[in-house]
Length: 278
Image (cartoon, rainbow, N blue to C red; front, side, top):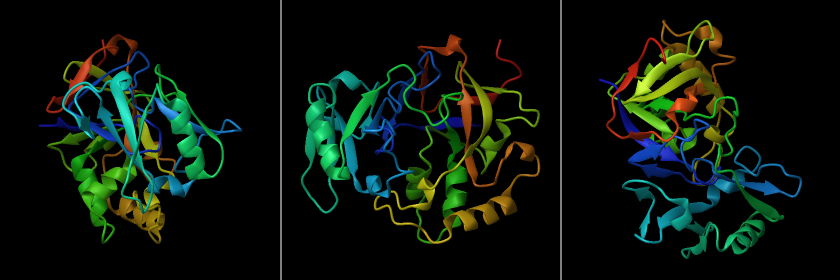
């Protein structure tokens, strides 16, 4: 029985994620607080893992000030009461900032780290997704992460999870189960997590980020070549192969109808493919 095994959000784009037990859907279809913040340079270009491998070396954890909890929130994750702790490579100490009250000090810290001036921008409506047309959570299965990790000696499942940075992880299914969440025709494919309606769009094309160690930024030799060869060999026969622009793709992009705004998904929720979204 497919079920929602894990939920992740990434409050600051390209920094470390936060594992949740529940998440709230925004009117845009995004999960609340996912990629809500992003770092930009003076030319208004996003500072991310695609452009700067050094960002992998910056550790970040998030804490509820009122509860003092970091990394994993047992319930709702609240930005206004949250602090971020940043740790530079090779240093044991952490620098702690409030995202709202100490924004200037935080951007100064980040500017020093990158070696050029940056700003931290916020979008609480849709966040800063890579694909604005499909701003819903990305979907992958636990079995897929296990399978793909096995292609690369020395990489753990947790390391592959950090490299792929998907939002929702589905348990109780075989590897690549999520590849049935998009259609050959290109029509949006409806499915549900509990009572929340999703629309599967297409396979997620991958960038340079998964080729690198998630903690150091060091590249894994021939990662993309190995990935494509293995993906070809393990591609399910039933998959809508015409939807792949290339086989360096993993997880599924989604949209959510505006009717789902405000609804909650929780770990353990049932996942099922549906016939319609009405």
